Structures are given as structure tokens and as C-alpha cells.
Length: 472
Ligand SMILES: *Cc1c(COP(=O)(O)O)cnc(C)c1O
Image (cartoon, rainbow, N blue to C red):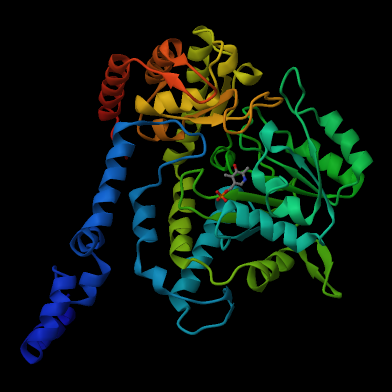
């Protein structure tokens, strides 16, 4: 950067003391280019403590198996956009009606993110501003409901999400929520039972979508129920939005009035997204006048719910939505499902009880309590973690255990697939998990004994496997 170099040189001559202070902060060059580039080095120099912890997290991710179904691994390009100077821009409102000057560049970024999101999901409207998946849900609820209005949603212990109406959270506190359950034998969604419940309860909003459901969701069936009872339908596709964008799972974008998702689960930056299809400009009465649904969503996003948009996240979302449109991304979504099926089959052959018998998506749950007497989800999670295998305990439908103990373990394949693993490695992973779960000695709901040698051996095998599939 000749200009920056020149400025630096002038400063060095005119004010040596100031120059040295700036140089100590930006050792590469006391220039705006030094501010803009070389970010990790800048951090290493100015805050070794945090830098070391970030390095430690990188080592942990590289040397352990990431099997949490809610996690993914974004690209370097997404990371770069997240850690960019765009973070410094403050504004409010949407493109075309901002409340601060200097928005020409971020307007282009947000427009690009919106255009790409619409293309990736075949949507008529996209709102890229929600700070999270939970925030996206809260915006939709706030936009169309008055406090005390009725919501029908899948219960959390049945695979639903806490933001769909659990008593401890926003939706559960300010609305009247009734929850539906999966069939107690098959653990599948029972659309006729949901219909009967909707006919009786008369909700203003029906929520579908889940955090722990391994089978295809029939969004069209939900819409028929919503239409029959005169309710809005919101589809929360946080877990499966990548599969939907790739065509591996049917899309709700035209069936639901609102489709929401977190953006990190399909492999982008943290954040939320609201999509609308054919109902995007259906009228709604709000504040004494009629407006299209999309406008109501924007007015609720700001000033109704959030303050400033996280424009660096929006830049990163733009990068990610372009990735979603690539052949590589689409092909990977198919491999994620193939790997989940291989992993489930391998566990099935080893005698494990897979909920619903298998999977149509990226994840599945195992009832570990039925594999061995005394084994719980908490024990499975903790003893596997000691061996470098990262999973999460999960409450299963009709689970006799508390949320801190649970009978279930949830496994997902997005990250191992991103790093290039295939069906053969899924067999190996099931073998490693099985070696630990057959030997661990439960001594309570969350307590156990694990042989030191087994722990060390498994940890080494996990490291070897991970070393062959470095993070990409
Ligand atoms: C993870 C998840 C969310 C929450 O997304 P955050 O960005 O973590 O707030 C919402 N809904 C469902 C179904 C999820 O699985």
C-alpha cells in the first residue's frame, strides 16, 4: 500500500514516539492496511492469552471427532468476512431506509446476501438481519401474534426446540402454547393426531421443524392443517436447511407462511434467516392498517425487536449463501445423509436401538438406556468426550430420565463429512464408540468408571483418524 507506507514514513519522521506506539500495536506496518489484514497476527501480538485459547480450540477441533448434529464447520472465506472491518459499521433499518450515513458498501453487501439467500432457497423474500435462529423465531411470533395468542408446536422432549414454546423461554411465557407429540410406538410425527389437536385447540400459529427428528417432514401436510384451522404456519428448518437448499429434503418455503433457520447449522456464520415464499405479500392488519407480511416482518425486526444489524455476519452470510449454490455444497449434503445412514446402520448391526430405525437426514438418536442397563445419555456424552468423541446427550420422546441425565445420545455427520470422511470411516467411528460404551461401568445417572487404558487407546485412535481428515 504505497499511500499507507508513505503516511507511515511521514509519521516516523515527524513523530517518532507516536510511530513507535502504533508500530507496537501493528508490528507489520503502521498503516490502515496493517489494520485491515493480518488479523490473527495482530491478536497474537496484543493478547497472547486469548490467542492461545483460540489456538487451543483449533487443536481440540482438529484432534477430536465432532459429531454434534447442531454443529458445522464454516469455510475460511466465511471466517474472513466475520473478522472483517465491516464489523465496525453501525446502522439501523433496511437497505433503502437506513438511519445513518456511510451505508453504500454495506447496502451492497446486504442486498447481495438477500439476493443469494433467495436464490439458494427459491424464496420470494429473505431477511438476513436476525442475530440468531431463536431471534428469527421471536421476530415472526412478535410480528403475527398478540400476547396470549395460541401456538401449537412440537414439545422439546419430543425433538422440538426450546424457542417453540417451552415454558422457560420467550414463546412459552407470552403466548398460550399447546404442544404435540410424536407417536409413542414409532416415534414418528402423526399428522392426523396433530390435525385433531389443531381442530380442538384452534391455534393462531402452528410451528413445525425440529432439533432432533431424523425423518422427512411433510410440510405440505402441516399447511393443509393450518389452512383448515385458519392458522399461520412457521417452518423452522435450522437443522435441515442445508439439505433443503440442496434438494435432499422437500422445501417448506412455499408451504409455510414463514420459514426460519439458524445459519451456522447448515455451515455458515452464526445468525438467523427468515424466508418467505408464495405468501410473502399476503396482507396482515397491524397498527390499524393493512400491510404485506414481509413488511410486517421488517418492521418487527427493526425497530420492533432488534437494534443494529450485525453487518459483518451479513457479509459472511452472503459468502455462505453463494457457497450453498455451488455444486460442491449440494453434493456434500447428499454425502452427509449417506454418512448418517452408514453410521446408523453400523450402530444397528452392533445392537443399538436407533429411534425410528434409521434416518433420512444428517442425524439420528440412539436410546443408550436400551443398549445397556444403567447407561444414560449423560454417561455416554461424558465418557466419550474423555476419549475424544464429541456427542450430546438428548432427551428422547417419553424419556423417563431428567434433561440432565436422559436416555439418548444424538449424533450428526455434517462436520466429519465436510472433512472428507465416508462410509468406511462411519464404520470405524461406530466401532470406537461401541468399544467405550460396552466397557464403561455406570455407577449413577451421571457417574461412571472408565478404564484408563481404553481411554488412552481410543483417544489415540481418534487422533489418528482425525489426522487423516484435516479441517477444511
Ligand atoms: C438450533 C435451533 C434453533 C436456534 O438457533 P440459534 O441460532 O442457536 O438461536 C432454532 N430452532 C431449531 C429447530 C434449532 O434446532
